[in-house]
Image (cartoon, rainbow, N blue to C red; front, top):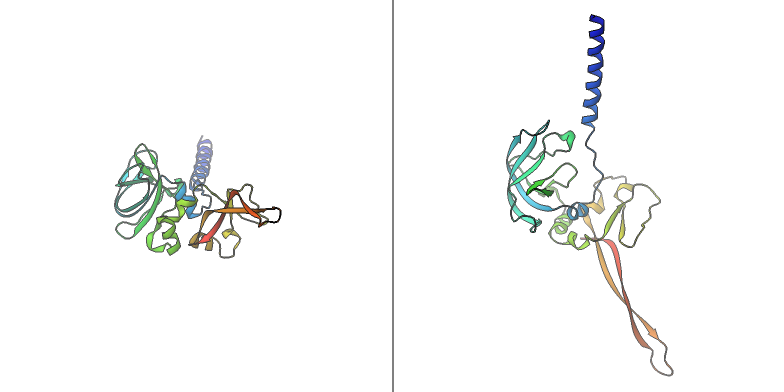
Amino acid sequence: MQSLCHQLLSLLFVFSSLQLHQLTEACSCALSHPQDAYCNSDIVIRAKVVGKKLLKDGPFGTMRYTVKQMKMYKGFNKMQHVQHIYTDASESLCGVKFDINKYQYLITGRVFDGKVYTGLCNFNQPWERLSLAQKKGINHRYQLGCNCRIKPCHYLPCFVTSKNECLWTDMLSHFGYPGYQSRHYALTRHIVTRTRAMPTRGMTPEKQSLPPVTQRYFIGI
């Protein structure tokens, strides 16, 4: 009987270990250019985190951070002012941890039932660590390219599959992520007007307007 109990306890320990390993490996995020993070977010703000409270819901709970909003860059149609940010309390479930009364953060997130949720897969950084180009992008430039698609290139050869795409090649550099394009470039579109000369007899050729062409490319900002 003792042998049977010992075997059952051993099996329970192994099962629990496997479950814990799966849980700790649960959070996995694809790399995202800051412009993609901006465009795919409902809310983008700069705020200082001034408090936190653990809410007892679910197995690990939800962390509610109280923030002092400094500026809203995106999300006016969702809410006028953000007072609380919600995230999973466990990092294994992609919960993000903010320092209290230390930094002003750039915080991006989605809105559900009137609450702002964020996590490790969102773009959340201390404002002082952003490059000047990233700050300009957040203020204005990123929104101009939200109808374009940034396609990550992890290994060569890389190809775009539509005119709406632009290759993001930071992952090919030995410097890794975040790379130069992430910190200094934004994807934008530029409309090019075109004309062509129409042949005429004994006269100066006339110019005929052609449909404009939209070009998309990364530019330094």
